[in-house]
Image 1 (cartoon, rainbow, N blue to C red):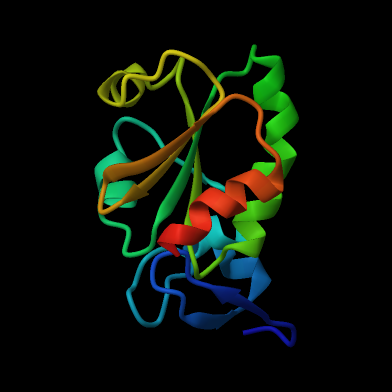
Image 2: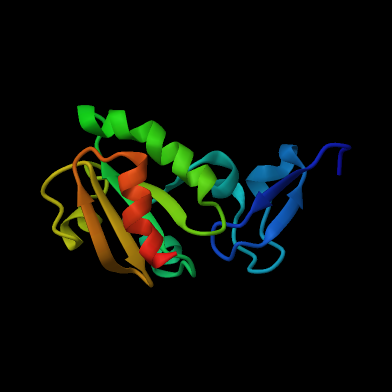
Length: 146
């Protein structure tokens, strides 16, 4: 390991892990053995194919931003989601799902308007926010589940 290390909270179990920044892509949590890349790189990219292994398997509540590249309000809320992924590390998992590329998951939750923010526990929806939301509004709704 090189001289500099970072402490990264696991997005799944909350454990603090000391890692070499040059090896973040291969780093796994010492406690739960899940990848630490998402915790260091911002929101986890959720897809139809990894939904089960990321969201369903998450031990923490999940804030999932369902968005599309062409959506103006989605682009406006993106920096808020990015910041929340850092702030909530170890308390909640924050992810993004592109509805155009992942229609099965969007359909599964009946998403008809974006941005839609789903709050999930054990893969099941427990709350939903639709449209552009403030950081405070998101935290207020999510705090009941953390």
